[in-house]
Image (tube, rainbow, N blue to C red; front, side):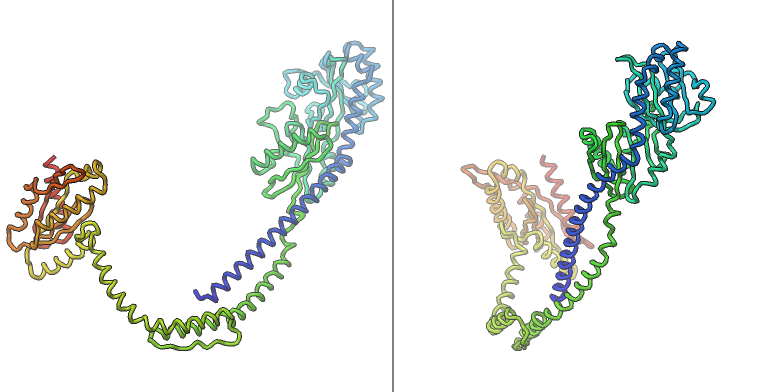
Length: 556
């Protein structure tokens, strides 16, 4: 790739990366500002929601607590079968009923397990008794669990099948000291309450009211409300954590709930993922009703990517203009002078000199480079011929070294393969018989183990000299690898192959090497093969190798 292209590509990448990281930094900074603003917005929004949405509920809770403290009601709860006390209590409760926003109340007494409900209608004024509670009835479990757990206040979204209504109930215990006498309270129409929530929610936020377990008590999607959460098993409850996308978001929300409960009426926030987008969960604990209010605010809604499209267009136009200017300057200052220099260097191949023609815009560094080049070019032409001669000599020497084993100065594997290939090609023409001997040094590893690798190298050199002397001018010796040697026998006589093989195999005492004041006797395993018609180098090597291993294993 040309230097101009590489410069342009590199410059483009640098500008793109710089622009990207600048945009990313600006985006992160903007997000931090937006998140900070959203947190403040969430805090004010939650406080505002508490007033506009929960104030009626908080008022009803206060009235329910006051309702439970009526002396006549407590007296009747102590003696639920006393008609006089009952009439007095019902008179006072009916008078109190008008203070509830729903103009209704309920009374559930522990002593007679009767449930009373009055909403001001004519039928209920005669006798507010509705039904008898039974501990075995799942619909009545709330009553017994509230008393068993001694919950001074319990808010529950609970459909009452007997009354045919669905309300948000505020349940308060009737107490006489530590004794629990019953449960009283009132309810708010859930449908109107939810409609008020939905109408008042911001387009970028979703409000959820939950209890201490995380069960959804109020939400704009009614199908997710956890009705009768007090009496449900945990696996059947509709929890706020189920609205989140991943486990990390659920853990962060749980931690935020814990921090919010430690600081009532103060907003705590944490980032979460909900509905596939990053949102900010703002949480406040409302001690008056023992609930949490959670707002999920879509941060991306406050910072849409489209707001940056104009900036991206400006950046793209600036990038194109910068590249055009850079291209022109690069051509005049660098690439055109370099092209002249390239033409001059090319002329040296013909042993000629062509002076580079530099323009007025050529860079100072380029001019210095050309000046040095002019001084060097003359010397290069003089040395060129001398260098070519030396290269030819060195190439021949290196070719020879590549074919020899540096330790023994015999043919190495590569050199012997090349030599054998050429020899077999000549054999295919003149059919002058030859053979191959495979020589393996027995127990050579023991020499290395006992005396070290330096001694092993000395032994290999002595073996190479010994084999060369044995073969003489009847063939050529090569180190095939490790402690294995190959001998090419050129068969001046039909017995040459057999004679050399028997000499190496039988003359066991002829090679004794002294190492570290100790004599080491070298023994060989020898296998040979005579070339046959249609032989290849591989087949000949294979038969010699097979013959050698047959001898080696027979000696064991």
